[in-house]
Figure 1 (cartoon, rainbow, N blue to C red):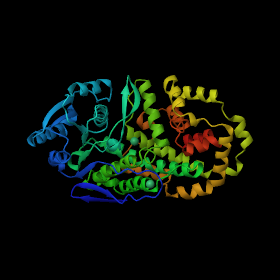
Figure 2: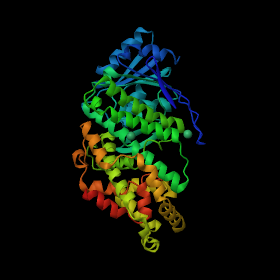
Figure 3: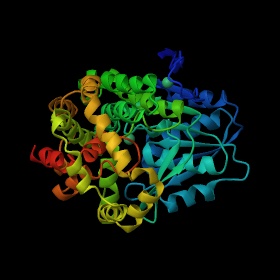
Figure 4: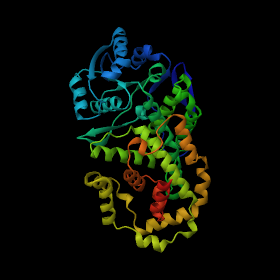
Length: 449
Ligand SMILES: [Zn+2]
Ligand SMILES: [Zn+2]
């Protein structure tokens, strides 16, 4: 795939991948550049959505960009109403915020405008999707890869839910605004990008072990985005235009792969499961969860260590009879999931991923596939950096490095490593380790450092 700029517009071309999967060209105008906010009204106008818009912002993003967008749109002849989500603390993407946006919506509102990053974009996309209106997004921080997402992570009664949603038709990322966002948002975005290494490795493993469909174009696009970002780590740390541009571009390109193949396989795997697990458990305890991307970055360092130990294991010693004697029954597995996730989430994960429980014949097939293909897996995963390199990369952008630094206790770290394999049926080397009976042993090694 070719990536180029026409003016400040990011244009992707050459999607002639022959992987056999269905590829969709995203219907989205992406603008990235310095000082481009002033053009936002003309970008929106090109799409002919109509005149009447609802602008969604919180008190912070309204000051940073929302007010200016509102003025520019009005000057350009749009009829703009404002939904200002005023909060004393950080805005949560919850039922109350959703209700406020719905109340502010008129019957004849033509489109929505979100001005913000994660939560505001997710709230707006969910309302836009469910009221069948288009929406456009003005990004204010490079904190996560969700601008292009079609799923909205929201909070329902304090519990995290992921709901089908839609992507913006226009995305405007003004580097002059984004580079001034709080720095913890930058290393959060960087962490989210770093996780793509694990995602690609697990996808390759899924292809080799289970014959999973694999799109080299999307897998490579995501990892090229990471590498470009790593090359610009100093620039990100020092908030140079080039550094911040590489970060937002990487987040967008990684996110675009989701639109191209219609699922998050190229961008999320075990490292995201770990981050989600920490978030879920913190929310259950009514504690503040670490930022998504920051968790993903830290989880990537642990996952990479896990991969190293796994790939170095001696697979000639796998004893199938011993593994079989320890294989869990479905009841035991359900009980274990409830221990890890609590009754509500544990039960629903088991229900949503029925193929996740393996009978012995399937487990045996996988064990053989792992043992017979381990050299091929080792060879194909040579693109991965070492866990030491991952730590060095995180250090370069001044990100937290350990679970402890993001408020995740030892117990919670261990549990996240033990159930990094469980959140979805999606194949990961954590599943491989479990299937050959090495999971606990490798988790202990990772925890010992
Ligand atoms: Zn993410
Ligand atoms: Zn493909």
